[in-house]
Image 1 (cartoon, rainbow, N blue to C red):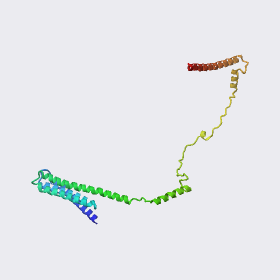
Image 2 (cartoon, helix red, strand yellow):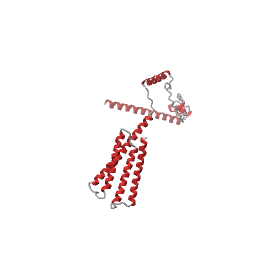
Image 3 (cartoon, one colour):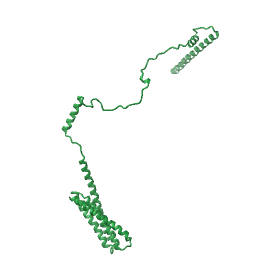
Length: 261
């Protein structure tokens, strides 16, 4: 009940301060406020604006104030800050007409600035603490992790081992539920058929046989021209084979002699 009353009371003060600040801005526009304006107009404008800003910060502090133990210190800071800012405004309204000179200006500025800083810092601190508190409560409420004792863990491990050894466990079959992907690739005929033995067939073309027999001199023909041509071709092929053998043997001899040297 107390927290609700503080919240509604703070919201009322906040709204009052907002109205005073808007009224001060409207009055300054209406009287065309400038540096050479009448002192009463300047005092009215800045007095309403200063008090309105203090009320706004006071309302924020009341709405987000903390409970004990932080709430006690927060309340004292809030009260001191509000009184300091109000004293600054009142002192400004008292001395502006006749004594608005140094060091009175410094006193007014320091008093009002100190009050505003205290109210702003206190509101920021309360807001941070409130967020941290709400976050911690949310974590505690949503924490659904079951706390197991050592005995429960040992029983669960023993049960799992018994199931795995008995074959009832799904892990013992190594079936992890992996589905084989279908493939559109089709093996060719060469990959499907097994390797066969190679069969060599001799060339049975008659013209080739006749040419081989004629070159080797096994068959003699009645035509002297063909016979002579065949013998010359056979001699030429034999001579080229002998030259190739001689060239190969000469190369071996030259290489062997170079190695010996």
